[in-house]
Image (cartoon, rainbow, N blue to C red; front, side, top):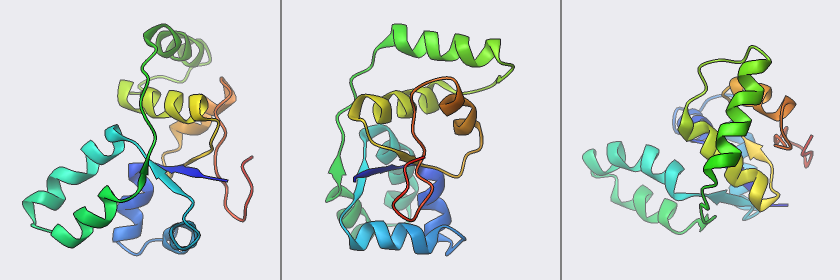
Length: 132
């Protein structure tokens, strides 16, 4: 099972945080997928710090094509707002839509994705091979 890895997990990984071991497993098993939006969030600081080796490694990851469906994004946002889940950015809705469209779970540390998952068909990666 491939897993779309959100920027929050990558940041945690680079800081050797709590999710680092889980992401290391996914990397070792070649299960990591990214997309251009996630790369666009991560790459500028890496370019600024001239982290060329890391940039090259990230560019080698499987990249899931983004097919933006604005009606779906709007409907997802409306469902979340109607459930009292406010302040979800468009970029996070696009990441959620990308995971849904690709039928792959999203590995994230951002808690608001749980609200999106409760109001859509988004599956979250919980580790250990689960895609709850």
